[in-house]
Amino acid sequence: MHFRFRDGACAILMSSQNEMIKTMQDAANVDIEAVGDDSIAGHRLAEMRDFYTYLMAELPAVIDRWHVRRRRRSSRARRCR
Image (cartoon, rainbow, N blue to C red; front, side, top):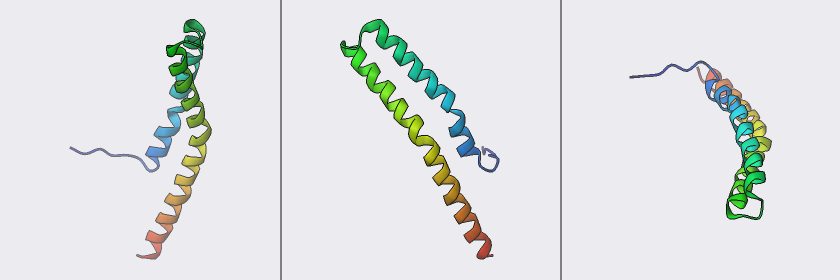
């Protein structure tokens, strides 16, 4: 069995996950309000929300660095032919 990915598929797939991450952030906020931010569940939900907030802030830069790295690798591969 094998899979075929189009060029750049991994970064595109990761970028498309942004909506899911935003949904998780929103759900955490709603649930924090429901259980109270001073409860154990509220603290865990706040950690989840904060993690996803951090991830959303960092992900664009990670994907940009990946594109730069990928371009460098492909230009080196072309020079070696």
